[in-house]
Image 1 (cartoon, rainbow, N blue to C red):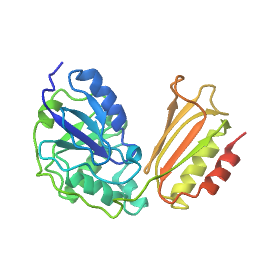
Image 2: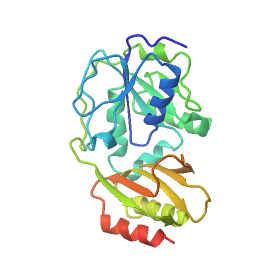
Image 3: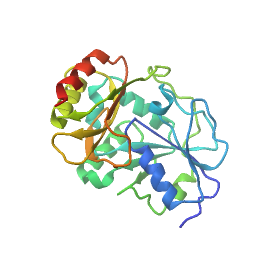
Image 4: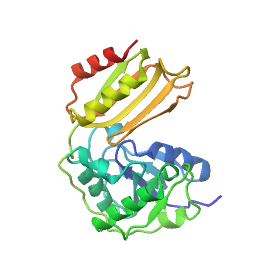
Length: 259
């Protein structure tokens, strides 16, 4: 087990890129380095691994500029970078985060083939970001040399900007009972792509017609993934985060997906 020393590291990335899982894994691999979530306008005063979340803070903004903090931008490489283009402003938001990064974390690499990862590398090169070191996390395990990477600064920290900065994230929460899961997935996908609703994050824990056990749904602006739910977690809820969401539309969506 390596010693994390006095490192101060902030993980940034688009909602749903897997930062929470990375923090949980870090706690197992580096027990001497605490983890925490950064709040809006909060500075990093103590060593640790911190997460920065638009969803948790309820607003689009960037971390406080600090020269002694390493910023690592997390990218979910299960989807192609082309998936960023369906929502105007999404790609430029990720690029803004990368402009302030000292390293890049390719997350979920075990679920991303080498062609997809090469596509991301080409995308980074296209935008002049290929000089940043890339950390590949596989099966939610940090690589052995991660502390060396996180101990180095690549960029002088600067104030970042984006047209979405200051925009409040809307959260719609629904208490749901039995759902036809395929109908729910199709409706959410139609909302994002056909109706171009700016959905940034989806989380749910559901009882469904198709499966005997509860299903966990995790969604980002680029994808929807489902897997077996932790049976100790709260059940029968659906949360949708985004901008200018039509709550009446989603109420009808959920009504139609019930059985």
